[in-house]
Every structure is written in structure tokens, then in C-alpha cells.
Image (tube, rainbow, N blue to C red; front, side, top):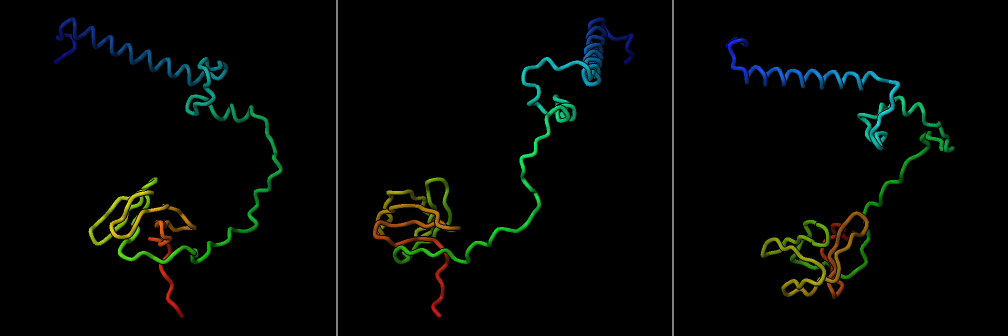
Length: 155
């Protein structure tokens, strides 16, 4: 349908929309190309897309903190196994993971979500959930543990 056959309202709204789009484009072009005007938005230097980063970086004073960034060594590898010197391992449960203050255990009856102070059937009360080295363990009140590194074979 041709533009001149539209009703007056349709033509008016179309022209209004085109005018708004043109004025928005002209304003954006003016603001992007105006290098001499300082932005009038508070804290504009914190918004990287509007802050004209190259100009602001050039204005910052160059500081030398005396740090030599040359790589000279590395970080020592972690120990092969963390040693846990608590009580014996508690059989019947496997530590699956820790989420926040709760541990997820897998036992004969399925998965169980526990936290400090919870009671495990026929095993006792949980005293702590701790990370030791790279492993998590669940410590029972009697000192027995669930989790930790895999047991080492006796030579």
C-alpha cells in the first residue's frame, strides 16, 4: 500500500517515528564526535563505554611502583597426598561433596545431606566438616573420618 493512500493517523505516526529516529541518530553522532566537550554525567569515568578510555588513560600520571614483572621462577607443586592424622576411616559412607556448611554423603541407604551436629544412624554425631589440604573430610565425635585422600596401600 502506497504512503499517500494511508490514513492521516498512520502517516502522522510514521513521520513522528522517522523524526524521532533521525534526531536520536543525530544526537548520538554529535556526542561521539565532540572531543572538546566534557561529559556532564556524574562519575562518567567509571563507565568505560562512555568514558573515552584512550583520552582518560593519556591524562593519568604514569607511576612506577618499582615492581619488576620479569618471570624468574614458579610455584612449588602441591604435596602428593595430604596427611590426615585423625581417627580411623568410617566405613559405610563416601563423601561426595561439600556445599556451603553441608556435606553430601553416599551410604547404603542412598544420598544423605548432613551438617555439623547431625546424627548418622549407628555411626554417631558429626563434629565438623573441614577442608584439609585439597580434600574435604567429615569428622565424627569419636574422631573417625569420612572422606579425605584415598588410603595408601601398605608396602
